[in-house]
Length: 85
Image 1 (tube, rainbow, N blue to C red):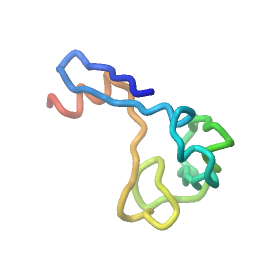
Image 2 (image 1 turned 180 degrees about the horizontal axis):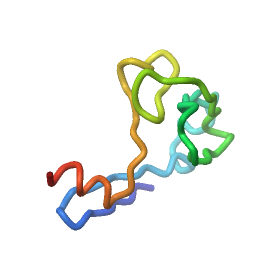
Image 3 (image 1 turned 90 degrees about the vertical axis):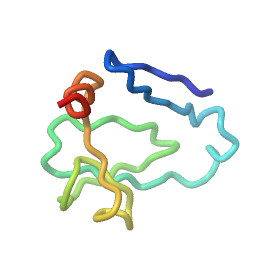
């Protein structure tokens, strides 16, 4: 199932429910969580194994992509501020 949310500035965020995805029965993905992240997301253990370690940038990444694909934790309002300023 796909759901969307639109911010006040018109940005659209798309979310995919992996429970409805035929690929959901594969091995969990290892997501890296930066050790400085104070309130880490909780992930569905069937899909994600969270491992805490210092990351060079961002709050989250995937094993093997630490320096290439960092993820930054932001609220929708934070996202508005980033893209509007």
